Amino acid sequence: MLSKAMTDQLNHQINLEMYSSHLYLQMSAWCAYKALDGCASFLSQHAAEEMTHMHRLLNYVQETGALAVVGGMEAPPTQFNSLNELFEQIYEHERFITSKIKDLVHLATVEPDYSTLQFLQWYVAEQHQEEFLFKGILDKIELIGTEGQGIFFIDREIATLATNPAKETTSMTPAV
Ligand code: FEO
Image (tube, rainbow, N blue to C red):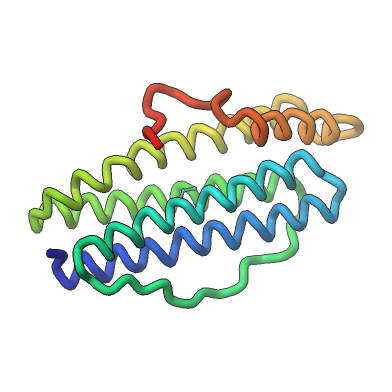
């Protein structure tokens, strides 16, 4: 059985994962609008992935007998000054999500709630992977540059991540 504090914090995380999905879907739409089809495809796929993160949490809360709450959210931003800015925002957002997972792990440790602590290990590994993925994309943007044909090559490179996400995996990749 979850404590009230743990239920509230897990429900907040459900809402955050949904917001991540909305944010990446909106970013995908912006990329499509700018004819960056590879980035649009990758971000659309990632938006769907965020919903699986949300459902994993929702199912866990429900399995404990607590009431899962999806909540509402603000609309994500629709305009970005550049592709670089867009991916910088994603990287910062993922670092924020990592901090929220750490807060959950901290609460599970001090309560203590060993079941939730065990459940959260998947998210700890996932956030390691997410930060690695988006830092890698920022590094590629820096390396290739967005001047001239650079943006075309970046879009093509990111398109390969949509079709082959395993390319960016490490030993910390959470088992699905
Ligand atoms: Fe649900 Fe992008 O982490």
